[in-house]
Image (cartoon, rainbow, N blue to C red):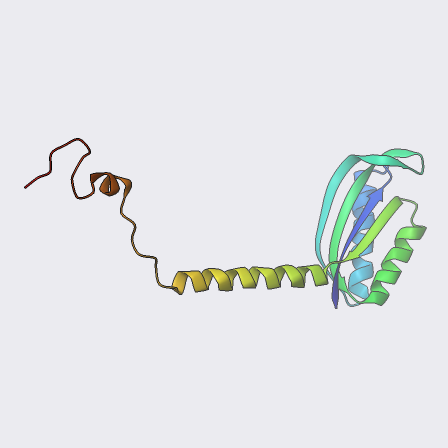
Length: 143
């Protein structure tokens, strides 16, 4: 199973109940095909960067799910024929997540190596450096 992220924009005149029902319908498409929906985020109405099908704003919905490629094809087909959706984008993110996890582990290894390495010799503090052997500058040396 691969991990996908799908962002789709719903028409602004759609009611919240209709959007919620559509989200549940899309969840069932994924789960019936053997996939799993990991998270759903409703971003609400936002202004679009450019006009899409004569709309200047839309309700954004982000879904992250794990499924096979056949499930994604069916998911996108349903988005295409839906009257609610004006635009959508599906991205496979499992490769990116693997790369990020690998980088995180490498950083942890480097940090662990630095922590176990011998500590550098202690540097004298600024006050100790100023005092030096002769005490304060301009003061006579102690005998």
